[in-house]
Structures are given as C-alpha cells and as structure tokens.
Amino acid sequence: MQTLNAQLLSFPPMAQKPDNFFDNENSGIRLETVTLEEFSEYRAISCQRDVELRANRVKKMLKKKWLQTHGMGDVVEYPDGSRDRINGNTRVYVWNQPYDGPVPSHINVTVYPVKNEEEAKALYYTIDSSDAVEKSRDKITGFYRQLGLQFNTRKIAAGNIVKCLEYAAWNTTSQRDVHGAKSPTQVDARDAVEYFQDELVALDSIGFKGSNKSFNTSVITAFLMSLKTFGASNERLLSGLMKLKNQERGPSSPKTGTDGITKIIEECIEKKQFSEGLKTDAIALPRQLDFFLYCITKFMEGENVKQYRRPSSAGSTGKGRRASLYTTWWDDNE
Image (cartoon, rainbow, N blue to C red):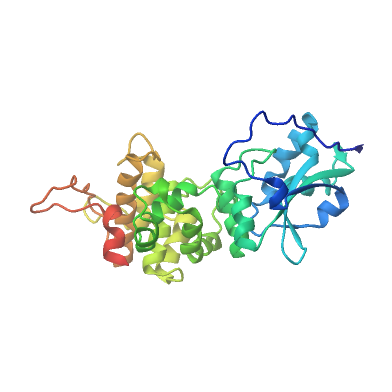
C-alpha cells in the first residue's frame, strides 16, 4: 500500500471579484489538513448515495492515476462542532477496505459552517464531486439512505429505477399540488421515493432476478402505480407479482382469453402488442403503461384479457372509445 502526502493547492488571485462572489473570509469557510483517520471518522451526510455500489468503479479510477483532487474533501460543520462528510465518502470507504492502490496520509478539507441539516443537504447537492458527476440513480440511493430504506433486489438497490419513479409519480395529487410537474422528468425525485417507499419495499420482497424479462421499466412502473392504488399488502396483487417472478403462465385460448399476469409475461417475451420491443421514450412508455395497467386491472377484477384495444387519441369521443389508463390513473384512483 502506497502512502501519499497530500499537498494544499494554491490558486492564482482573481483579476476582478464579481459582484456575486461568495466572500469566504466572512462566511467562515476555511481549509484544514486532517489525517485520513480523522477524515474517516466524520459521519457521512444522511442523504449520501450508496458508496458500496460505486466502490469498484471508484477503486479502478483511484488506481489508474492519482490526481491531486483525490486528496481533497469537503465537510459541513454544525453549531455544536460535529461534522458530516459531503464529498469523499466513496474514497474513504475504498481506502478503509483491503486495497493495494495509493492512499493519502492526510486530506485537505474544505470546511463549510452550516446552521442545520437542511442547509448541509443543500450544500451536498451543489458540491462538484472530484470523483464523478453524481447521476440520478446515485441521488436515488441517497434518498433511500435518508429514509432508512434498504433493498436486496439489485435493480432497485442500485437506484436504476429513476424513470420508473418519474412516470409512476407524474400527475399524482402530490406532484400536481406541491410541484406541478409538467412532465415526468420534472418530478421531484425525493418526493417520488418517499411517496412510493412502501410499494418499493413490496416489490423488493418478491425477489426478482435480473434475468427476468418481465421485470422491466414498463412493468415496474405499472406495478408501483397499482400497488399504491390497491395496497402494498394486497394479497391478490402480490400473488400476481409472484406469478410474474416465477413466469407462471395460466391457460390461454382465443375464445376465453388469458389472465392479465399471463398476458404481461407473454408480451415481455413474445412482443405481440409492441413488436419493436418495450422502449422507454416519452412516446412509447405511456402507451406500454396503458397496456400493462389494463392487464393488471383485469387481473385484479378476476377477468381474462380477450382482446386489448388501444386507448383513443386525445380528445376523441364516442361509443367504444376510452381514455388512456396511464394518463387518467390518478384521477380515478386517488
């Protein structure tokens, strides 16, 4: 194990201070050099993303080439003197595991005085991490940690359900009243995680494997919405999820149709309704969600799916026409 002595970086003076320049001298922000041991003892801020999921990626980066910024970190300091790390958490985790790459003996730390945790979190989300730009899925795992949520299903635990949460939460009462999200991408991610936390726990309890083709973005989104509506502990719905996990198909015929769960399994494998596959763009995903929500609803009502009829285009009226279940779901079910 190599040990490096971290050196403080010097910056050239600015030619002209802009009007909105943050005055470090009066803000209390300061630079300190602390031992790696001391830096390791600071708490990670509560909304920190899951470091274990990123450890291997960061380990490779640290071993590939040592950069001066690797020996730098950021912490917030509360009025009582306690500190939280807001940058450098994954590196600390790697350096305190069996590791044969370079390890600094000291860390150059920028200390930000804050009044409370809310202010600390605001700083955390603005810090430009020297490791990598924080991806949306990393923020999702940070929200898990903040809410005390732990998952075993890899896709959920890694936060690879950003689009599922966005589309599931969009147009719910909470998003309309509080944030007014005009599109799924404007959904407040933390609110979405909190809103669907019981449903995420229910999905995770089923124990889906990554090789299960039915556990895709469209299906996960549809079930998050359905679990919120029918109940995260609804026995019939959970039994349907178990059938989905086990790829357990029921009887099927052109005359009697098939149950909704079987229909979902068949579509994920055979692609009869969506021949080009289950895409996740803003046009394809809502169409797919109508289909899967339709199948789930039929299953919950104990009726077979005989022939799926696509929803009418926006503004269409008349006999036999219907609105998209996806776009009207929360109107009917909240």
